[in-house]
Length: 190
Image (cartoon, rainbow, N blue to C red; front, side):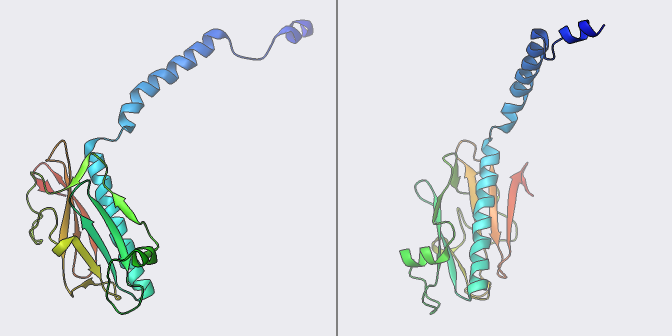
């Protein structure tokens, strides 16, 4: 019996390997479409990224005790850039030095599938009207205390899908500086 055991080799048979490869192929074919970003996901992620950058600018204003600003450019591809008052005089001139002073993200451009705008969505209830933004000149200002500037200013920035104007998200900034992302689904904001 020991001679027979010594002759056996450890390993996989060709059939076992083919079964495993086939199962991996089937699972990949099932999972890959779910991992591909949809237009709705791209809109939501763009809104979340802008919200994170707004929160970063607000936090930087609080931590450094200097005013910050996010400027949203709604024309062309759509982008935003952040600035921090470098000199401490509470005046932001939107210079390269002030952009670098924020030490954050530089300039961010929207995904090619996404643009600023409200699309076919209703305005966000209870918030200032505007399309694509209700902030004057697309500028969101945070004072050194983290509140919006001018004091109590609040507004909304909308992002939507280029291919489907019903896919819309909104970034709402309250006068106290809190930031919330909303998604338009089935005729209501969630």
